[in-house]
Image 1: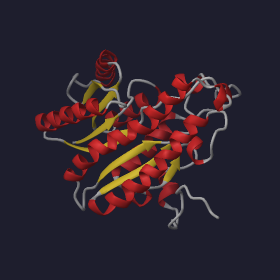
Image 2: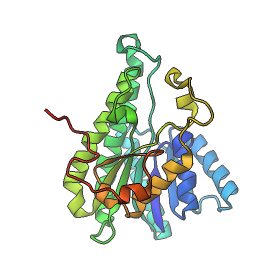
Image 3: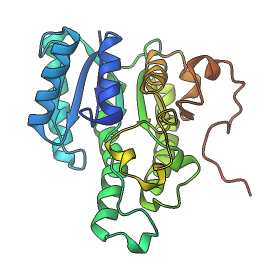
Length: 269
């Protein structure tokens, strides 16, 4: 059984991904900043899905902006690997925040800017810095390990109302470039997955989405399907590239004739 590690797994997109990967047969370790909430959510999921608590679902309290906490998480993951005989094969960097209020950057408090950049940029950087060597140690030519960053259309196209959030998602493209460059030949893949706009606490708090009706949100299953497609290896040709749930499907991505720059963030001069 493959272990999937998902950050920010108690709410929104993260919670959908945890449930989706459990349903698909993965062992899932997920994080939340609050350890008690992580444990409670794991118990709820176990009951909902008929899984013994602590068997295939593990909730861990981790602040992804704290390198020491991430090192402790790696120790915990190794313990679970030893206890179960399973290996970590998938890392999903999902934990993220957005600044408030919506509007020009000069109206946003400095602490909001710092929180957004620290969580959304340093969080994935710290996670990959800590876990990539472990993933590479498990990877083989015929069995690569895979990282999925939850990116955004705000990264690929920009959202002027949220400058810090948009900038943080652009940074993930550059992180993916580096991971793909140094990791691909050694068995490490990385994908940038935009979830579209799923109805969540975060998205419903954003005035930019006030116009949306019930049919104007991305279906969570669309995100789950793409994430599972990336995790399975059937889309490894997309390593280092960007896909968007609600627009792309596993089948449409497989059918693409990829060029070197296709679905990568590039500036043409």
